[in-house]
Every structure is written in C-alpha cells, then in structure tokens.
Length: 195
Image (cartoon, rainbow, N blue to C red):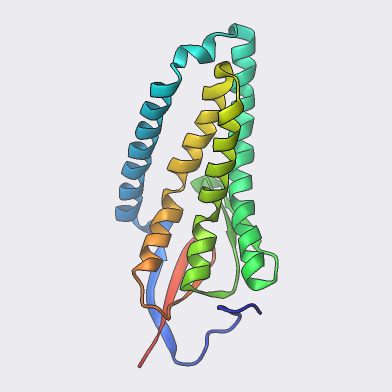
C-alpha cells in the first residue's frame, strides 16, 4: 500500500457524507448547466480563432470522413479518460484499477477499493482533464486549419465532460484535512476521523 491510501478504513473514522451522482438530481442539474456554459465558452473561443467554415473547406467527402474520425475519436477519448484515472489509481495504490460501464446511464468509470486521502484523490479526479487538455492542446497547435474543429470538438467534450470530476474535486477540497474517500465509480463515500 502506498502512502495516503489504505485498503481498510483506519480506526476512528466514520462516514461523513455519501454522494451518489447518478441519483443526485440537484448536482446533475448544476453539472448540466456547467457543461453547457463550458461548451459554449469553448465554442466562442474556437470561433474567435478558427471560423467554422474552415472545417468544410476540404469538400463533402473529406468533411464526412473527418466527421467519422471525430466520432471515433470521441469514443476513444471516453475510454482514454477512464484509463488515465486508472493509471493514477495504480500510481497511488500499487494495484490496477477496476473499470465499469453503466450503458443505460452512458457512464464509464474507473474505481478502486482503496480509501484515498484528500490530495491523491483530487489528483486522480483531475488527472484526465489536465492530461487530455494539454495533449489535445498540443495537437491543436499543429493541426491544419481544415481539421481544427474536428479535433477541437474532442477538446470541448474533454473539458465540458469533466464537470463530474471537477464537482467531486470541489467537494473533496471542502472536506476536513484528514478525510478518506472510497469511490466505487458511481458513488463516493467520505470518511472523517472522529475526535
């Protein structure tokens, strides 16, 4: 076991809060609004730098092929996002993450049976956003103008789709310093040490 992660809940800890994101309608509404705001801001930023007409400057057949590549890229991105969570779970636990899918809810997730301290948990939560924002940003720097929007849509999905991770990180940062978090991918349990 690595530092700041535990396989068993240490003595003196008790459940402080349980978050079931798929069932929390209030949180889901807030996250949906934030997704739309982030997506709109990114679209405006993209339009400021690359007019949308550039995406259709390569002809109908190539534009259709680019749309297909974009759709495949988005599907690959969803898996790659969870893979990054898994890589960071392994870094902090020394064990491979488990992965799950909730097809009815359109969710994929990485999880562990470890109890994480605050800092590693926030790093795990935000790692995909940071990694993919940087990598996609580097690719966008060098992509031909006609391909910009097809790749940029994946970046929009990356940033706006990370609202769940941002929400969980925000909640965690507002917990006591000694909090331990157990995350099964669909719900998070926050345990604090009782005095």
